[in-house]
Image (cartoon, rainbow, N blue to C red):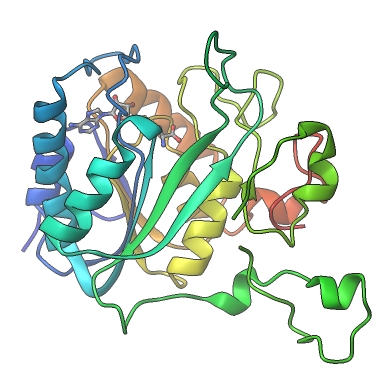
Length: 286
Ligand SMILES: C[S@@+](CC[C@H](N)C(=O)[O-])C[C@H]1O[C@@H](n2cnc3c(N)ncnc32)[C@H](O)[C@@H]1O
């Protein structure tokens, strides 16, 4: 039994929140935890020792594993600093199977001195059972080059699955990162973007969550986000007709998140409404 009510968000610690859920009860968890890089959050202090951060990560990821159904899916967004350690912990210690290591390539990263400017984050697609998990490939297929360029009769009329890449010449982005390419190219949520809430510095683009929730869950299934932040996951889950649950440590963020959620309309995904993305670059789902 649980006292947690679905389609609700809670102002609490995520480990405590997940402990109140029965084992094997959630279809999909999307987690975008603090990256332990000294980011200035409202309440959480993002500068643990490496050991403390890894131990804490293992504790919350073990809870994710426990609450997921046997055919459940776990997507983890993480930065370079701890991507390798968290991937090893998730697979070797906790027992997840890694299906994909996706690179989310974005523009408008912070300019750096004496190093290359960061323009990506890692998205790990983990499952509990290698043979049984939701992967709605029909829902995310894109037109293939065989169809678009070569007019090849052998082309699958349903298109192909999206795929990953290196790019050295950002001026060629439009050609290199079309919807038929394998690196997920979505701009960060910048100051001028319509979807920007303005009160949380780590807001994920809805397009990222839209693809993840669409491919890894089906209508009315249960989606959980342990680190709500601005609430992107629950907002997109609501728009896509999924049940949702989320936890956020900061009361201020949680209150703002509730307002954003109240405003979101069920079954109207952002990318379904607009032909063009909010950035000047192609949208994932066009
Ligand atoms: C990277 S942000 C998430 C951003 C989110 N994906 C979005 O689209 O806005 C991480 C969030 O986790 C919250 N947080 C940190 N520790 C937490 C914990 N133990 N339980 C719940 N939330 C926590 C922070 O306050 C922060 O808002």
